Image (cartoon, rainbow, N blue to C red; front, side, top):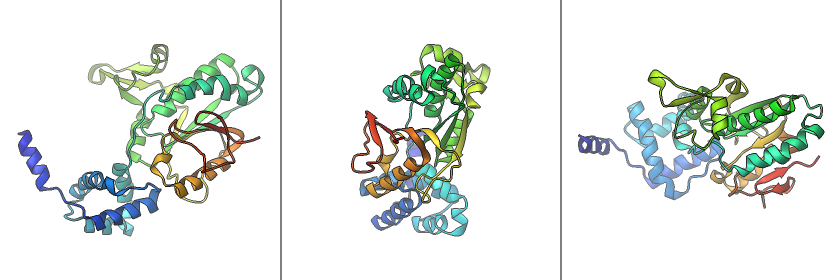
Length: 291
């Protein structure tokens, strides 16, 4: 049976020519800034074949005409970006960042006594994927504010993929996904599923209500269409998919979106060297906008 399904799938697979790949990769770059090198042609072929089957199209030429046309841009473009983009994340990923947040960034922003009269901190998780990062931030911040008993916070979480945003909004995860969360925080911030939901865990409402989710294309426009300036921005393991020109534009927009003295966290394998010299490095993959 499995062999039959495999043969059936191969019979319906449409191959992508080098020219078609260049056409799609240029289009994807224009739309969201993601650069696909030639080595990604097989990956793109496999993933876009799913959209061809869903739309009952027989060629990539027809699919491109549709997705780049007015009807396709209204809905299919979002679906194409969903299947093209990679979303890999974990709870408490790169844990040193959260230690730095607790021990240095938050005390600095909140002032003496970890209250300092600040009414609210605004945090942005850019490229939030399926929610593990913003919920990690919410747990860390909730613990801090519970201790200082002063001030408040809100988290904006954005991603270009509507598929992962839908998962994030639900805040429901299997047991293997929540393994990195410390036991004390699991007991406090996660509800265990019962019956048909056994083996699943959901973030408590108090935590889910701290995070607002929004679809946002980081590459669109000369500045972000966000009304609120941010005290902290997490944009980790995202810029590796962009070329240097896109990275330069992106971090200039991040700079303008931060309050003076605000913090920017990027991935441990990433750097702003040669991209933006206006930020001040404070530790590994953490930068600050001068006051």
